[in-house]
Length: 386
Image 1 (cartoon, rainbow, N blue to C red):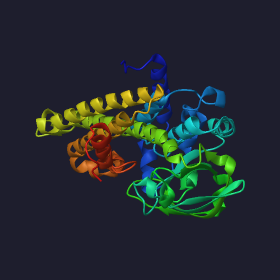
Image 2: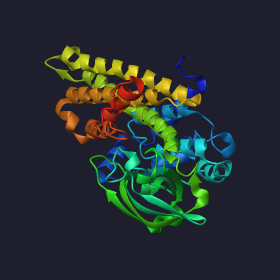
Image 3: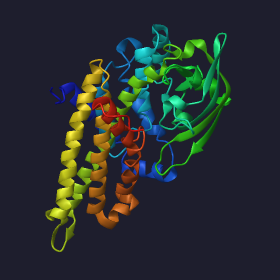
Image 4: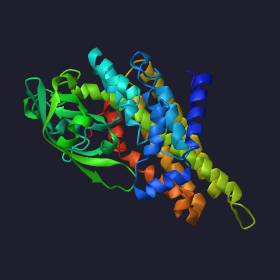
């Protein structure tokens, strides 16, 4: 397999890097301190068509693959920003593209491609279910030409800055299904019409991450907004989850390379005891080791993206890419923090901001321990560990 970038992909990378120059470290630092959403940056991404790259040309998008989407997000994070406030608009597309009807694609995708609708939210996680998605209790009851949904979600990101979201709910009670993954359904929620029917409470977190707890009571959704078959929603979201893991891995790799770039430069410039601190193996070797691990994780990411673009479901590769990327980036973050010393804790150097940001992906989306459990059971054939 050839994972070198094509001229077109290099052009995408360069164009996104130029856009990011208009949003320097000071921009992100200010937003982080105020816990504000990067509205201007996300609007620029939308206007540039960067968030609609996965939408086929017949629906108004660019028709690129997950490889190009991964490159966009990596470039954003390597430039010092973060693609997290907008990345869902990329991976949520997978559920609609692979499982939506032709009528739904024609109706829902063009407005998103034009930037008229922001689809940046996916309501799955619940307070009592956590990572065990099959245990969710939000229920959608069929009532004629509509579904009536009641329940609660937590850690639903970007709800406050989305015009629409996808929501996973039970349409058959858990105790009535043969397999626990049955009886789940995916719905497209038009927040421009439904927002007032949803109670939303912002959750303040360690990082500037726009996320909410949501509560629904008799939320009415047209039957036409059921994505895929009723009761088969768990299968519908799996392709979206694989895409999410690959894109998150790409963002995290961008962060990891950002740490390496910063630490290497500082190690050459910082003089202590009459010599650059980078001349000391205790400083140099951790940076070099982290860089090697990042490059290895990047290869797994490119493999996963390529398989996805070929129409496969790269469960192992997508999960492994996310696992390896988070581990390599966390090592690079610690190497950078050690290199900067006390200055690493000073906000104007941005190391502490990025340090906080890269801790999250080790926990979500999908805890790294669950990835190891998946590999152990489904790839290596060992007994279920949980």
